[in-house]
Image (cartoon, rainbow over all chains, first blue to last red; front, side, top):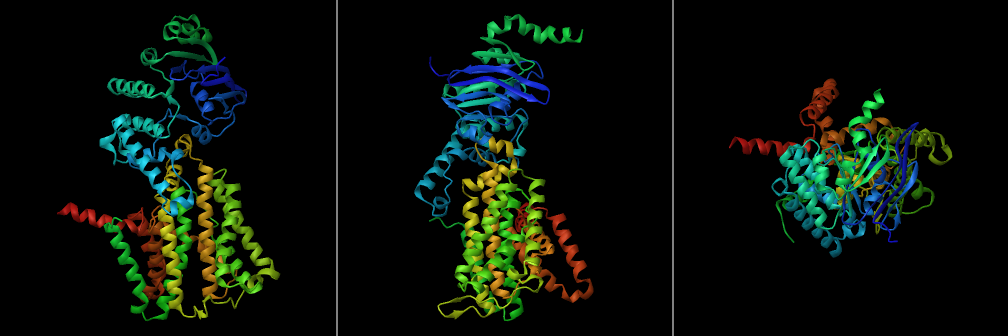
Length: 259
Length: 315
């Protein structure tokens, strides 16, 4: 059997007595767009935080490109090629858009003290590459006109785009987007989804957490459904939307609980 | 090489500062300048950890004191020249910074502040009580004056140039670092730590690097101080000096390359020019500092830009 591009094996996170993520296993193939959905509090964001190292695993393992990433810190996971965006918008507020993107390119930059102080040709070359890459990303995300605007002065939708732009600068192989269209108007939402499709075409694999069912059904190759931290279904959008457990979780589950 | 307007300003700055001792005849004014340059080394470093990383090292005088005593003791007890004592003091202070950073920067913000104060307290107690090494409250005198090939740095003007060269070097060094990917990582950590981590920046390592540079520069400043004043005592490690460092950086402009030096200049010279006010000197000084921070929260370094933009707006 071929090793999966990414695999989560029995991820479990406990906060005290509460099990936020319970033996969650799933795989991602290269080039896929896969979505993680579930009712509020199902553990989607926690699963994200675990995969990117922001929360420690209680149990389980994470493998990526044949390497074991279990227990690594966020910056190490990013260096392995898994980069995320956040549910609550995070930007570098006091920094201009273009500079923000260059800050995102940290892992490919030349950071040797001697190279910097002597202005070595390798260092100059790397800096030039990063600048060019930032230009490309600006054009690609449509933020070109805002290149010299401080991140805090961007509109909400633009800040969300910038977040993706910064993540792209880090050259992700697997990009995790936590509710990328949350709070966007339909127009912005559509163009963001187009952007995500275009990213896939560039060879970036994408894991989404998203609330907007239209968006999820439209864009995903595969969907993993969580409820109370457990995987209750997995499959194509069509399969998932007809799955009894999923319908129950979204429509009837909470009703039954309250009775 | 491209010569921009900023390069011209650097050249003008260097020429003016190099010619100052020719114009200023008063030994006392030169002495104050030397003190400003020594403090500049200290605040340039402090600004890296406080202004750029955003972590308050509230015991920074400890590293200054370590630099003072290391350099003084090395020259007096081992008989090495100042030119060995200076780098030795720099490295030893930086080493202590590394140890404290590795321990305390794992958990940043208030934990780091408390850890740095604790270390300062330890160093202060050691200086006061390890009498056989530090002479305790009496202090150490007769610290040798530096010399180059038989020429003694015996006058204040000599020291003016010596310290000025090192300040220029420190500024060049920080400017290089800050405009590099390392500087971008500094900014990333300060602006949004989780986002920085998510693109592969280790806030812990970056903050530790900044802290090592900051403490090494403090040690260098300490070495210059010891060999300039030629007498050191536990007073160099008083907490009031820490307050001065903080005011210099905030007043001049934290998170800017030249701001702390401007802050050091104003903070040191202003009280001298307020002597005419006699008893009211310090109250007026305090008032000016408060007004500066209220009206120019980003530091006095932003004043020329502010005036320029107002002036352009009016036209």
